Image (cartoon, rainbow, N blue to C red; front, side, top):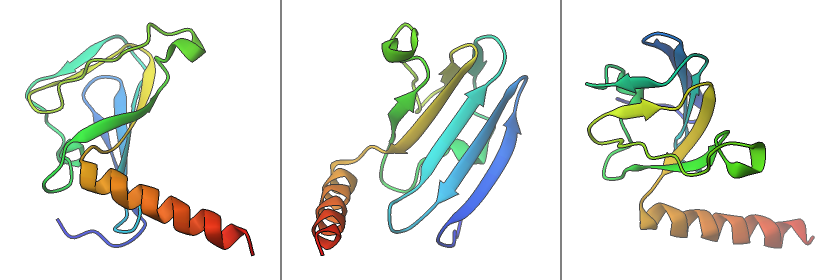
Length: 117
C-alpha cells in the first residue's frame, strides 16, 4: 500500500469499534482504535488498516485503560494473531521496532535544539 505523507484513513470494525490510521513517513504511522461497546475480539483480523508497517510490530503508545484514568492498567493485545479490544476503550499504537525509537529520539533532539533559537 502506497501512502502519502500525512494521509488519514479509517474504517468501521465489526460491532461497535472504529479504526483511524495516520500514515506519515517522517514520524511514522499511528493507529487509533476506539471500542464503544463491550469487549470485542477480532479473530481473524478483518481490517487491513490494522496491519503494521513493513518490518515492525505495533506498540501501545497510549490507552484509556491506564490506571491514571481509573482503568485496570496493562492491556494485552496479541497484534499478530488476534486483537482483543477492551470494552469502552481507546488505544493509540505506533511502530514498535528499536530502529524507529532511535529515529524518534533523534528527531526529538533536533526539534528541541531548534526551539532554543
